[in-house]
Length: 249
Ligand code: SAH
Image (cartoon, rainbow, N blue to C red; front, top):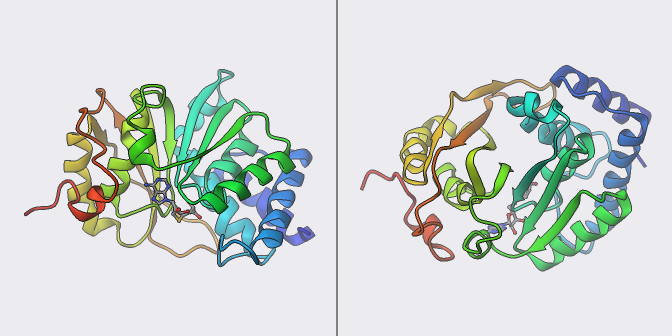
């Protein structure tokens, strides 16, 4: 059960980000919190299940990914989005709850986590979300997923250049990828710029972000897709991590 303080925190925190949440949406967040607590014993979903911590560490952190694309999300038109390596649903599920105009795919490589996501989506009653069990390296090679999405997101998926290789092939030219990053960002940014270029995109200025209750040095990396990604990417499973794009050697 979500506590009153948790809900307050969430409602106020979201408002500070420029996102208004209705009673119904706050209830959906409470349902996600209960589902996490219920399944976490069986499936290793997250180390954070405390109802006091979930609103900040998971929900607000996820919602913050919307900040660089709020004008797009505020318009009345449907946008397609993919969350790559969604895990327990972050950031894709909170974004789908907050923005009903998003048609969201949650992509997850681990079967048990994908199963949890199916369960959570059903419990939340979200018609706009579908779960895909698979690997980015394989999905992004299928024409129906490639160079297609208006928006992509990924939290804690991989080091920056690797995350870019796994995510950017999904994004349509003109679309955006948003990656929340932590204190390791500065060291990865140069390789990130090179990787983005190689993948047909460019990194926009990084957006620093402060949320009460979250570690400092958080920032959102935003990439704009310019051209379809070269057919050579993403490379086969494991190669992006083994030989990251943009590495100096
Ligand atoms: N985004 C979630 C989970 C992060 S852990 C969060 O921030 O809480 C990274 C997740 O990505 C794991 O669940 C893992 O199974 C998944 N993953 C890793 N590599 C992947 C790939 N190549 N394709 C799809 N999912 C992947």
